[in-house]
Amino acid sequence: MKRFILPQAPGPDGRVRLSGVDYHYLVRVRRLAPGETFPARLPGGGETLIRVLSVEGAALTGVCGPEAPGPGSPLPPIILFQALPKANKMDLIVRQAAEGGLTELVPFSSEYSIPRPDGEGPGNRLRRWEKIIREARQQSGSPIATAIRPPLSLEGLLAYWEELRGRKQKTLGLLFHQTPLEQASLHGYLDKEPEMVVLVIGPEGGFSPGEVSRFLGAGFLPLTIGDTVLRTETAALYGAAAIRIILLERTSWLPNIPLPCGNESSF
Image (cartoon, rainbow, N blue to C red; front, side):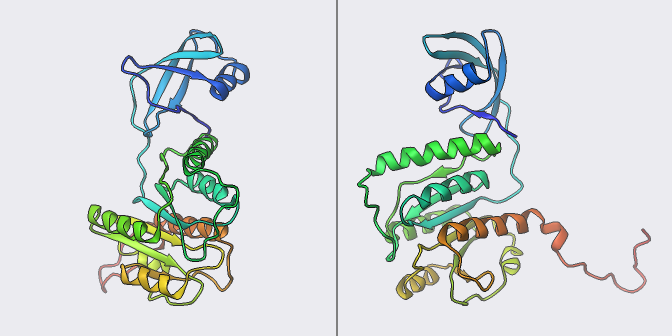
């Protein structure tokens, strides 16, 4: 369900001032006028009702009602470590991550990552990704405020991985790799009831043997799904969707344990 997402938190008095594309959408498209109200989601995931106070000077001014908590997620946080791909493929990955309700997206430079040729500054790139996330959440209605970090080096990424492991005792790291190295199935990994899942996807050329060794040495578990080689943008969506579906349907796919003789249920 589509839901307008405030670009920033309201001020201390609960007021918001919306201009630019937000003004166009609310006033020109939705035809909102002073005195009318519309539901909105706060940047942190909570919900509120905004009453329009004025529409003038190409800006809409409104006041937020009491914040209501957004719907809680039944899943543990799911974080995507994505090696930077070529050209604008990262934009698609960012959009899909937000639509899919991932908690966080962490780009990083891999040995086979190809630098962007357009010379775009990191600050502009991050602002564009944040804009894509907001648009994707508004379109999909995702209540999860997907976060994105500036790109890291591999060393910075592994340091952040250790920080995440310190936050949650049962943090599961999964390395999607084209070579069958797995020790268990995806169901088997997720059956351990992780408190956080971190998924690592490589660039177009995959990971080098040295990078694979470093990830495995840091505690990531290898995993290969299927017998086809996926594009990096497809692998990110494919892997995240598989994890979400398995976790969402966990109670339905757990094996039925037969009852001891004489204790059969009388349904």
